[in-house]
Length: 419
Ligand code: CTP
Figure 1: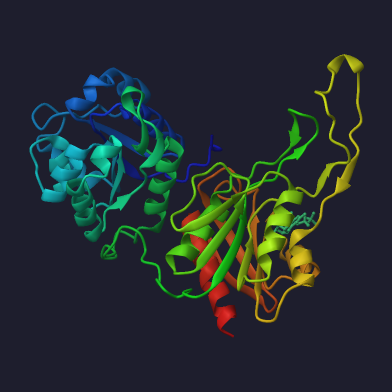
Figure 2: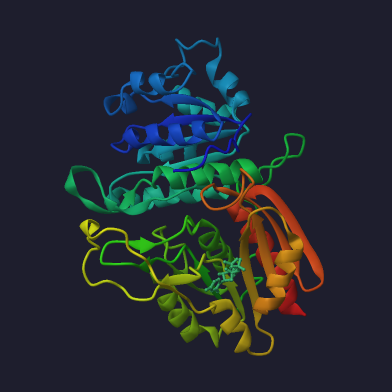
């Protein structure tokens, strides 16, 4: 999963677990948050214990499992937990919990804690499609969102009892990423809370603009089963695409990542550098802004073997040829006013080398991240970047969530679009 970067050290997440089949995945969420250094307090509802026993959570974290208003270690557990929490996360969040949270019920420890806390609230809904699509649930979600509650998911896929459709809880990795995003982007404790859980995008700032984004690491086939790949997850590019769409742009995301499609974004799936070059090439002409966040392979095997490579044939050499430099091609063919943004994963923050790369590739901006930093790069939910323009350093952020990096990249890019 992720590297051991302890980006959540010192943060407390109260993890409310509702009574749905996805409760078993809350265990993975707990592990994911703990691995990132968070103190996680499991808080299970009665219904949740029908799906996962308290012992499972106890075995995985030092905090006692909280379940009731009456027999916890604190005399007034809901206010104590509410004050301790930097984030209240509910995963899975059932239709019943959504209703109770929307209406301010407080008849068990989880709902009472939700009322007693001033920490951001993040919900990962999970239920059957019919329930998720019911107007009553929709109204509760709208109420919660209007108060600044954040939601992650639900996605589409297998549900309980062999059914399938919308309502499946987001995957544990996505939930952990959303939690990191909220914790990183939350105001410092001395500042008043933001009116909404996530920083509000200047919606409409990119209205009428076409934005083309690439994401993920390409895979260059060696034979039918093997490929040369890299550790890029695609999270950063997907975050840029989602942010551009939320600012009103028409967004096409050309991606090799298996991450879910962001809302309001047209997704084109590719695998190789050549496919990425073709799909981007087809759409580049109409784009006002192109963000190349993909980790495109620099080399590919010259020939793809038709059969699986046979180990008994002893040592083999692999002949590699360079791939097309998509960013450089885009720059050579760019139309007036189009803004080009590249990303560069560097080991060590050698800005002179990055400035040379910006020049060589003909981009307007280069988002440089030092992948030797524990909180930055491929396999972590956060990033630390320096954005270089032709005039020098345009912005520096981090460690912050990849969503926050996306916002900064788009802020700087938008200022260039306007000039
Ligand atoms: N890029 C591209 N096509 C390639 C390789 C990279 O468009 N074949 C883009 C990436 O999407 C990124 C930028 O170029 O936006 C910089 O990628 P990087 O891998 O750092 O550049 P390289 O050309 O590989 O530079 P070097 O090998 O010198 O580090």
